[in-house]
Image (cartoon, rainbow, N blue to C red):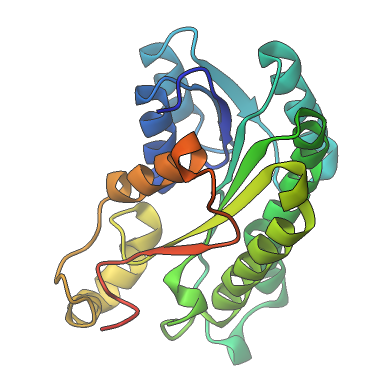
Amino acid sequence: MLDGKRIVVTGAGRGIGRAIALACLREGAVVGVHYRTSEESARELERNHPGRVRLLRFDVRDPDTIAPAVSGFRESEGRIDGWVNNAGIVLPSLLMTADVDRIRALLDVNLLGPILCARAVLPIMLRQRCGVILNVGSVAAERPLPGQSVYAAAKGGVEALTRALAVEYGRKGIRVHCLRPGPVDTPMLASARALAEEAILSRTPLRRIGRPEEVAEMAVFLLGDRASFVTGSIHTIDGGYVQG
């Protein structure tokens, strides 16, 4: 499904990002595996898929580190067919007691990061007159838990960014999507599960936690040519959580 595609996945060292990277590799893509702290996990992907993984270390909050990573990947691979904005952090806190630095960190990684990465990769896709940007949001944008006010605001911004970019660049052959995962078995969900797993399950009609691989399957579809008439859409993968 992705034979010959060149795709970059941010935050690919663990969780949903790692699952997306693995699914893209399985489907024949060459994958730029971005990491900032999960170096050993990223290098394991490189060892297990020789010749098809390019390690990229940069800070999604810093345009001065994003730009050389983007240009370096394009120079080595000739093009960038897909870019997955997956890198994110969760720092639960009620708004009234949230430290300003934590608020800035949440907004910088979860919202500014996708904006800066999209801005960096768009010129390449415009020259190609094709490309896919896939943003990873969260059901928190629609149905947040207590302590997620800033995180929910950032992920709501990611959904708005998706729609706006689809409108701005659709005529140039660029498609933009947003995945909206629900409760998925990743390190980011660990704190919520510890505090309220039964409550989460009771609000999920399928009565289970999702797997990163299930999110990755939708990502592969959206990154591929079978989704050629899909853009600007928010795709919820949550076991019915939002409806529960």
